[in-house]
Image (cartoon, rainbow, N blue to C red; front, side, top):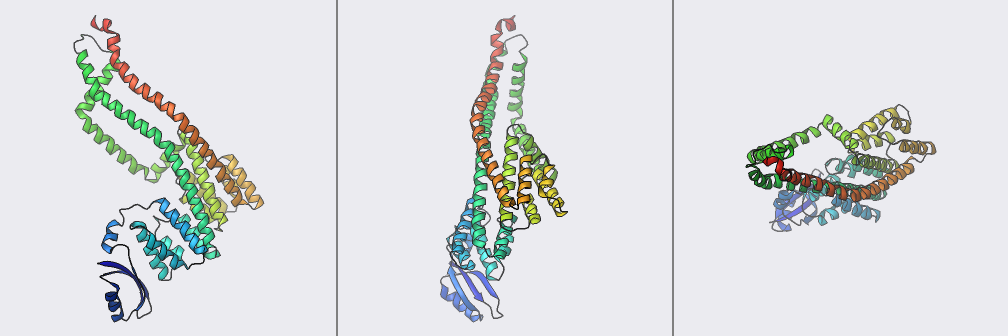
Amino acid sequence: MKAFRCTYREAGGKIVVERMEAEAQAPLIEVLSAKGCLILSIVEEAGGIVGAKRTHGKKNIKQDDIILFVRQFATMIDAGLPLLQCLQTLEDQADAGRFRETLHLLVEDVTRGRSFSEGLANHPKVFDKLFVNLVRAGEMGGFLAEILERLATYMESASALKRKVKAAMLYPLIVLAIAVGVTTLLIVQVIPVFEKMFQDFDAQLPLPTRFLIATSHLLRGYGLFVLAGLIALFFVARKYVHTPRGRYQFDRLKFAMPVFGALNQKVCVARFASTLATLVESGVPIIRSLEIVAETSGNELINRVLRNAMLRTERGEPIADALRGSKFIPRMVAKMIEVGESTGQLDKMLQRIGVFYTEQVNTAVGGLTAMIEPMMIVFLGVVIGGIMLSMFLPIFQLSQVVS
């Protein structure tokens, strides 16, 4: 059985896009003609319907796939190709999976007469409000290709920034996991050997040694319960973080962390400035732009600051005055926004802020990576060395223990 995407007009005039299975196109033509339908096109799909459904929802849509789609779509629109033809072409060349299913639904929406932005709005988990509103602005202004190019550039920049921050965070997490694994192995396997050596000593062992032996007994006797408790604690904490209050406290904690707190703040400011600049430059009203940036900021603290700024801006206050009172927005940012508002070049000033703080993040990540490596080596040395020292301490004090 082969799968075909059939586009036809019903007797009442309604255009329908439907996937149908058949051995060839001829049976489908006979069936649709018998119903009195006017066949517009019948295109064979790369895979069957069953296979498409099987992969739908199991393959996550990668950000790189969306960026590539936007780039290709912008190029085709700029070349003068019809929007529906662009979507159909990109759908045909997309890999089977969830993103291809999304593109197929977009084709159906556009075929039925909906605008491209309306079709995008039906998939909020794939295309966020920033994406939808920029496309809507491009449709209304007649410069969709330019908007898509600008959107792709913004998404590439945001994706690169996110990857750099993740890489900086990943290294210490890997080292920490190794430290926990080695420590657990020493406590469970090595310490019992030393414990048997110390059993013949008729004296009280040093406090660090006794603590490690007690920890060894706990992990060997109740290790599964400890592991289950840690897993349960992780899921409870994760669920709490997804609540409004938990998210706020977690984001506040991220800003308060030594070293990483300043980095998180710079990332948030760079994202806020770049996103707002893209929206303002694309002609989205400032109030709506602030609302979109608040929803896509990724940080509850910045979200509240921007929502407060949106409300105050609605009352006629300048954006700079609304942001100046927040301790999470640097004073330099508020001052540059004030200059941008007074000169009528807010979008350009926001772009400069975004570029400046992106460079600050890149510099901070580079310095952090160079600083973390020796810190992690020292950390591993202190943890593992402390354990070994605690076990050899009774041997160093052997004369006192025996007496």
